[in-house]
Image 1: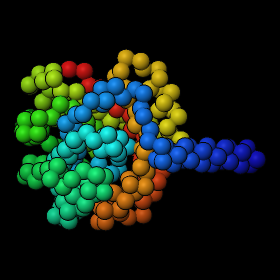
Image 2: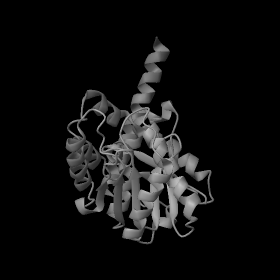
Image 3: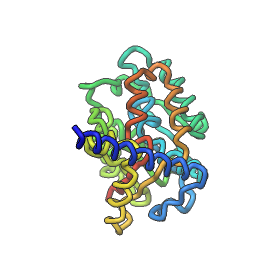
Length: 258
């Protein structure tokens, strides 16, 4: 019993120290020494599957980009209508993006009959590639950020988005576009909250080739405000997820080689 108390105390202290570190960084903007590809202004396309993906998983990256005046476009490939709340969720996504300093006119939401939200809903990768390519062309995109092949939660729509981007790269061979994927972590790291910033930094230091970037969330309060805009989804277990999830506090991006 004494060992359990000691372990719990150690975890609590580490959590508090990690969270305090992040809060300090929110007052003194964090300069990521590994983010050389992002030192020039970019037209960035964030490709997601559902409204709320941006707030649940990508806020450290979005906050980093908007704070440095990169032009961030958001492409959401469904309206999230699995529960019949698609029209509501569309409005919530616009509101959340505004909270994240992404103007509404830079947010595009797709409502295609073949791209419907839900487990077991298989999305056509070629269709996804065509939609993404249209967005790239119309906004002169030179960087894409999306899910990796597990998609953080393993959701099939997240994974299809990844493979849609892959299909685009395979079909068009666009060498002038940098493509980055959000790295999915194991369940212990996923629910380690702010503690994961230390593991992320160590892991990134072991990759000196520039294929790994990490972003500590400089504006964690903004992330909570953004997720709260998704009122139809802001139930107790998602509030708990956002608090415990390492993706609220840090993102690790891996470059897709093509």
